[in-house]
Every structure is written in C-alpha cells, then in structure tokens.
Image (cartoon, rainbow, N blue to C red; front, side, top):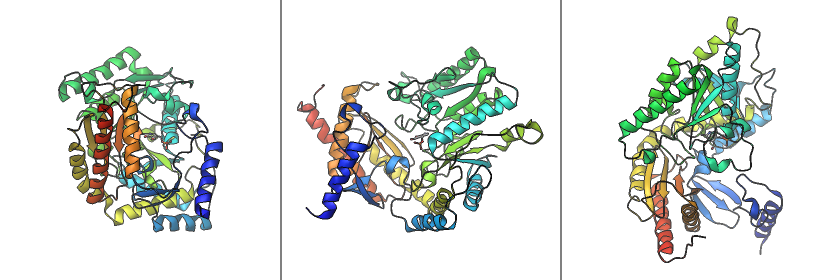
Length: 463
Ligand code: PLP
C-alpha cells in the first residue's frame, strides 16, 4: 500500500472515531466512515478510494459552477491576504458592499437592502427575527405567528427547524411550535383527484380559513420555498404563490420566499420567485449557490417598503441587533463576486434554460419504469419518486429502504443520488452538459431497474 492510501485509511479512521455528522444514524455511530471525498473537478467528485462520481445533488444543491474553479480560489486567496476579516458590528468592507449592490440588481421589486448571514438557516432565522422586530417596532406585539407548509425545509436552528414541516427531522428534539402553524403541502399527488385549478382553490381556501381561525392580526409571516426542495421538488399549482401573496398583502403579513435552493441559477434565473413563480415577495432568503459552496455565505433581501416603516423617523430609537461575527465576511463575499462573474461570463442562466428541457425529458423517460411513481422538475432540479407499490401516495419505511438501495447501486455505477428517503433528487452542477445529463439519467435508470429486479427476486426484504 502506498502513502496516499495509508493516509486515506487513517483519515477514515479519524472520521469514524471523531466526527459527528448531520443526520448521523446514532445506532451505528463509529461503525463506518462516510465516503471521504478527496477532490472535485467540474461536475465530478473523487473519493479517497479513487471512485469518480457525478455529483448528482451538486453537494447540497450548491456547487453551481462546479469544482476547482481557479477564479474563485484566486479571489478567496487575494481577499484573505488583503483583508481577511472585519467586524460587521462597527465596520464594513468593499466586497460586502459590492455584493449587496449586485444582488439588489438581481432581486425583484424593491428588495434592495441585503443582510448577510453565514448560511441558509441563519438567513431564514434572520428573516423571521426581522419580522419580529418589525412588528414590535410597529407596536403590534401580538402579530407573531408564522404560517409554513408541511414538507417544507427551512434549516437547522431552533426556529428554522421548528418551521420545517418534514416530521422526520423532529424526533428527540424539543421543537418550539407555539407560534408556528402548518398548512398543507401544495403537492399535486395529494390533490385527491382534484384538477390543478380545483386544488389551487382548495389550498387558497385553507390559507384563508387559517387566517380567520387564528385572527390575521396574530399572523406575522408566511414562509415558503418557491418549490419545496428537500420535500421532494414539490412544485405548487400554477398561480399558488401570487394568490397567497395577495392575501398576505390584504392582511399586512410579511411574505418570505426561501430561495436558499432556487436562487443563483438553479431554476434558470438569479431569483426564481417572480420570474418562475409569479410573486414579488417582501423578503427573499438565499445561500448555497451564491458562492457555489466554495465558502459559507447566506443572506436576505428586504423590501424598501418594509424597511421604510421601521427606519428613519419611524425607527423609535430601535437597533436591529440581530447579526453574526461573520456577517458580510469579506472572503465569502469576494468568493460570491467571483462566482457571479463566472456565471455571467459563461451565460450560465441561458445554459440552464437550454438544458432544463433535456433534463426534464430525461427524467420523463424514467416514468414508465417499475417503482417510479412520479417524476417532476424545474430548471436543473428534479425528483424521481420511487414506491414499491405505485398506487400508494405516501411512502413507508420499505420504500425508503428501496430508495437507499437505488442510491447504493448508483454510487457503485458512478453517480451520487441524494437519498431523500424514497425520492431520488437530482440537482447537478449547473455547468452540466447534455451528454453528462444523459449519463446521469442512464445510471439512475440502471439503478432503478436493478433495485426492481432485486425486489422481484425477494432480495430486498421488508425488515
Ligand atoms: N432553506 C432551504 C430551502 C434549504 O433547502 C436549506 C438547506 O438545505 C436551508 C434553508 C438551510 O440552509 P443551511 O443548511 O445552509 O443552513
């Protein structure tokens, strides 16, 4: 065994003994290391055992421009040497100011003021804390409730985890939910035979009824992803966001669009809310793709209309004291500027728009395979939902086991499929080519067919 191999084995042992990772299966703590990735190039990652894999989920929906981009590495190094840090509590820096101006150009409507955070959870947390601040300054301390959807995901701080409607994330945590109210997931598969328009009317009526029951003057915010990403790429009925936004406006409720996944090109636009989903929100949160995952950064864009009500003469001596040591971190902001420059120079948004139909057609070509209950996509994010019995609507543990098996087969064939239970979600780096999409779909096809064969032979057991 040569040095590099020995080193990799040692690092795996370190990981096994000393790392606690997100979504750790505690019963197996210390038994196995997760695949230890050594490096990335383009749309590929390579692990320490030399396995070269297409990065199907683009990390966690974030490596938009792919791995090993010299321009971003150079920008990070240059900024680290120039000014590695400044306190955002009493100074600011040039990359943060420039990035805020650039993002303000990309956001819809008058969402022109940017607050930077450390990632997606802190972006959503800050958006929610802003609405608290807003209503308290406006003298409305009872306007506090937050309406969210089942199947939504908004992060892993106390408050954002409580706003996340994926029940699998809750067991054994104390989730504060007094102020948080869940409404239905806008998932057509749960429409119970209704047409898209009927389902839309039903969802809007439910929102209206929720406001009546709670009293709209107790509701501060509606928080929603444009499409529910981790929930399984659930795309709401056409017109959903605009109809809900109209009710929010009527009742002075802040509409927060969580674009942590959908922004920075994932759906073919800088921001998807207006251009893809027909809504101009009051606040948009972003993270992930803003730096293509090279360094952590998140943020929110807030509308001038909202800010006017709690600033200047209306501020009543108040300070927006929410913030982080690393708010507007100069190195992260420099990385984001370099990332955006690459996206512009390579016309990446046009590329995503050009690829999205090919990607959608590829996914549709899997629709008739055994196990496949539904396929859906928008831009370069898609989901193939697999169920042992296609007539079922809700997945069970057995379906999740089959999902894990498909994932394992695809891994051996050279593709990472992010296993969200029974849902094979693909959101590749945005630089992916037509041929690479074909390769990705072809591996997923093989994975599904092999798992279906194993199931038919009884090799995947119920227990
Ligand atoms: N919001 C959405 C829609 C997300 O998908 C995620 C993460 O996947 C988050 C928020 C949390 O972001 P982070 O993990 O960067 O804190």
